[in-house]
Amino acid sequence: MKAKKALSLLMTAALATAMLTGCGGGRGTEETTQQTAADTSAAAEKKDTEDAKPEETAEAPSAGSGIVGVALPWLGTQNWAEAEVMFKEQLEAAGYEPIIQAADQKVPQQQQQIESMIENGAEVIVVGPVDGSQLGSVLEKAKDAGVYVIGYDRLLENTTGVDGVVQFGSVKTGELQAQALLQGLEELKGEAPYNIELFGGGPADPNAPNFFTGAMSVLQPLIDDGTLVVVSGQTDFTQCATADWDNSKAQSRMDAILAGNYSDIEIDGVLSPNDGIARAIITSCENAGQPIPVVSGLDAENESVEWVWSGRQYSTVAKPTNALVAETVSIIDSLLSGNGMPATDVKANNGVIDVPIYELPPVVVTKDNAKEVFADDPDRMALLKD
Ligand code: BGC
Image 1 (cartoon, helix red, strand yellow):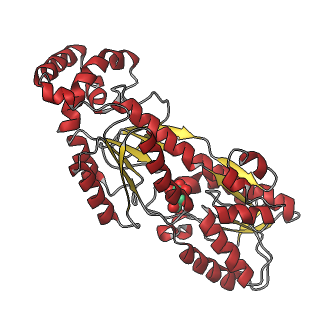
Image 2 (cartoon, protein in one colour; image 1 turned 30 degrees about the vertical axis):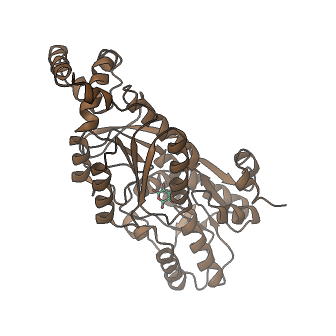
Image 3 (tube, helix red, strand yellow; image 1 turned 180 degrees about the vertical axis):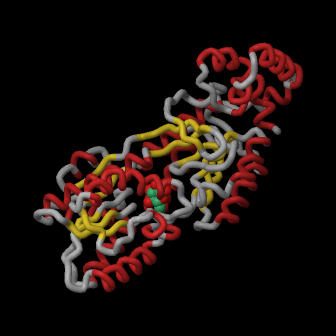
């Protein structure tokens, strides 16, 4: 296919560097780093012969030109809606022609969108999967067509068709959420023990179990020693997960938990995996006549930034979309310049291969540090009204 063939001249040039540095990445270097030096030079020679045709050389992709597909899972939380806008702006500014589509949480729709990006000649496809494990065959197809695939915000599982994933540390995010919950309980709810409940995100999203694992690494010892009491007894991810990250499902679960367990006691805190679910939980508690519990969040959505500022939601975690998109665009530049994937020490096994991960740090936000965290974000700063 076009991109792969055209790349091979560039890859031949980049080969020696990739072999020396071992920083791998990109279809060409990934294949060649697994070969012996002798195999590699034979392969390089063969590619030279195959690709010496002038019209193919003319098609060589380069940084700042060509089609880039972006397949988003849905636009139901602010981070994905921002990603749609920011990918368009940043890819166009860098000289690319973006095709951006969102899949409304539907796996077949996302598979079709990726297929059509391949057919339309995308050099790179950026994928935030609806379901991390359901894109195996379409991504293998992209790989066979010589298209680079970058996972965005979520891991791409059970496929060799992924070159790397750009995301905020997902286990770290869960740790921050749990630490903020504890801090809020100590600050606002007096002496332990504290009555709490646990919520997780959509089980098809590989981030959701990671957020939960990170949070439980902080909370479990305190559940074990009685500092925290999960009154409903629901502590497994499967019990706590929220299908499709659907806020209304989280609100119904919270309604049922309160009705069944809290008729004569107060709830002190709730672990929430993101801001939409946090607001649903808080609303449910308000409707049940409970004092507002300490609730964690994620995304620094505008509405939750206002709620944190007014004291209605205790914390959120900022994972700035513009930074994640910028990181993705710089990786695209690197790939299409023939420099392969940038080096990284972080890898995650996706069930089939170890995937290079490019991690940005998430930052916890409470009322105390909101002005510091959003100092360079005029839109969110404008929400912090005195
Ligand atoms: C993202 C969160 C988002 C959630 C639901 C996760 O994969 O990391 O930022 O809130 O999906 O859309």
